[in-house]
Each structure stands twice: as C-alpha cells, then as structure tokens.
Length: 262
Image (cartoon, rainbow, N blue to C red; front, side, top):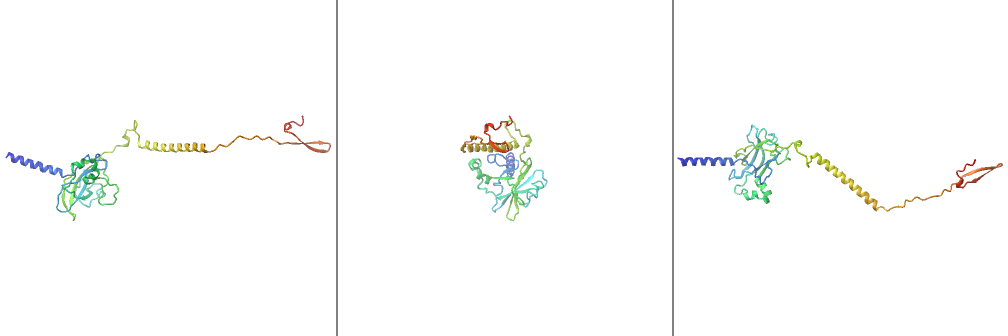
C-alpha cells in the first residue's frame, strides 16, 4: 500500500509539473537581458505544447490581469479590446513550432547565435507601434501593468483544438518620473543637453567666421595709404583804386590773412 501511495504521489507531481510547464514563460535573461521593459514582454515560443499530425497555427493572446472577460476569440484585436482591458486580444500568429527541433541550451546561451535564436525562440509582446486598423496588432503595452498570456492552437477552419493554461501575471516596468532623476553632479537633464548642443553649434560657427576673416586678411595684398601733401596755390585779388582807375593785384600766400586796413 505504501508503494502505491508513493506511485500515486509521483504521478500527481509529474502531472502538475507538466501542467505548470504548459504556460507562456518569460524568455531567458541570456537572450533578452532587459525583460520585461516598460512597453514589452518577451516570451518563449510554445515548443512541444501541442503535437499534431496536421498543421495547426499558434495564437498568442494577451489580457490585462484586471480584465473580467477571458474568453478567446481569433478576431479580437488590440483596439477592440482596449489593449486587453475588456477581453484577450491576439498579439501574434505563427506556425506551431517544430517539437523535434527546438532550440538547444547551447544555442540559447551562445551569444554568436543570438539574432537567429531570437526569431526562433522568442515572441516579443508590444513590439509593433506601426500597425493601424489591423486585426492582429502587437502594440506596445502599458507601463507598470500586469498582463497574462495564453497560447491557443487552431486548425485551418479555424477551430480551437488545444490551449495552454494562462500564465501568472507579469508586470511591465515602471518608468521613472523625469523630475525624480538625479542630475547632480555631472549629470544633465534633457533640456540642458539641448541647450548645450545649440550653444556648441553657435560657437562653432563663430570660430569658423573668425578663422575665415583672419585667412582673408592675410591673403589680401597691402596698399600704400600714405597721404600726399599738396601746396595751396590759391590767391586772392584785392581791388585797388588809383584815381578813377580800378585794378587788381595778387596776394601771395604769406599776405593772405594780413589786415588790409593795418
């Protein structure tokens, strides 16, 4: 009886461990160092979640933790559900990952294969800010907000054939208030950086103009600007009367300012 009890307990633990494993999990920190961020959460793709002889498609649903409706619908969009506030929305659709060829441990932790591994191993929720009026839109998440995730598998109809369990709540990061950032000593705020950049550009233009003026002055030939002296030859005529005859005599320059009445 004791052996049967242990076997039942082992089977129960094994079943619960498998059930826990079939939930969306955060990607390895070796692949995504900063995860979650303020607007994104990177998850592992559902390798070996559902093995089917026929082709199926995996849907990743996202819902806010405070949402009361968790019913799945393949047509639920980000905008229609207000970003998962009213119901789960479809954030990504991709082929069911091949269970016979999952990423190995060496590939996951090999930095030289990070880029190729990311595409095969990770699905990043909140990675697309350019989709508009689309049923499947992976828009950025809200900061400091708890989200839950689930993988659902559909056939070509599409009809739901399998679904994982909901993940535990995962929180996005809280952004820092700009007023709480320490900018002293040696640190600069955004406004100070802009002002410093503008002043640096203006200083560059002033120095460039000064250098251009100096070069222009050095390359311009000098001109003799010594003033020339001119001797005045102006003479004044002073009329004289002799009897009834009027005649004029010329005064030389030394007599120009002599009082004729003296």
